[in-house]
Image 1 (cartoon, rainbow, N blue to C red):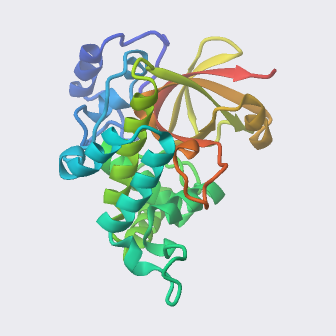
Image 2: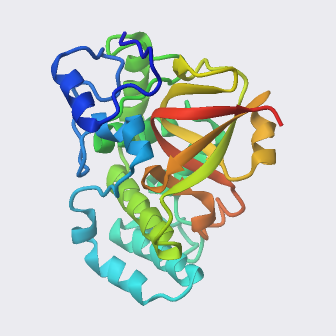
Length: 292
């Protein structure tokens, strides 16, 4: 395992790339032997350098394929209009309206084929089948391998990684292009963030935890601050007090907006209304341990 003696080491992406080429990273490193469908490589997306100097991320081909949808968003003047447009477009583009319950044409879409099923499954249990599919989306699009799923993943030959793959494949089967649905969800969230505040680059978020069993501590700067490798997808909240409901201490993290996969406040779907959860793409982060 590559040790980080100095939390400020490897200052530039060029230095980090050189380290990658020299083969000093291990299989557990999220950027090792992976590819990305974004404009940047995994070793950049997962780095602290990216968090300090973020750039926009976009899934290849999504905005071009759904250009009409984004033109509709441009014409919408309120969040309510944009959220409704997103929900209606998802139903039509991925034929979700064909799966409405029989005899109830105005009822709720059958969630088995919908991105909403996977968001709800994640909210209940991040190590569920739905959680594996969500982590699989990050791995396939961003190139970041999960580090935890029903246990710490020690490598691609570990039982935990094989269990994750089984859940991922089982959950993604017999759905209507779930990864493509999640592509558009991510692009919509990124559009909405920039539409609300084009100047924003980071958001401070909080996560309540009991211990670091799900995360790898790479270095400690003092008793309150550390460098941590987060799982490839993680739950956070905007509310510091709410974070205390989920642990005995709270991690405070400054997150680049381009690594916000989902924000519960951006959707009007009844199943997620009122959720304050924010899903953050992982990698190496500087975290502060908050006690008060």
